[in-house]
Length: 72
Image (cartoon, rainbow, N blue to C red; front, side, top):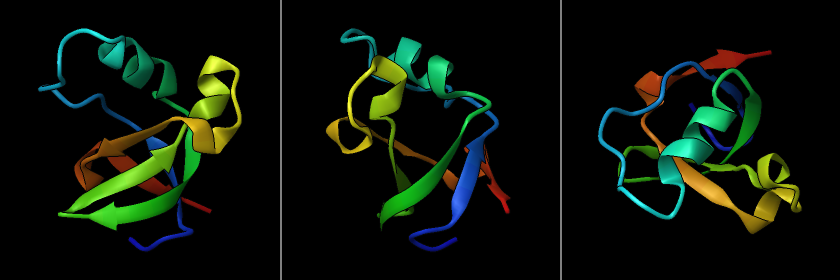
């Protein structure tokens, strides 16, 4: 995968930090499609601000590639 690819979140990572709504945010993103905004240490950065009613770039998550699939 590369920056700009569109991916659908198909799984929520098993080990997420507790608190701050992290689990709820990942669950709300499941099944949605986002462009890859960055890649670092094998993780994909997705801008997900629209999920919480903000501009996309205002919130991001880092997710493992095996939790997403490429979309056209």
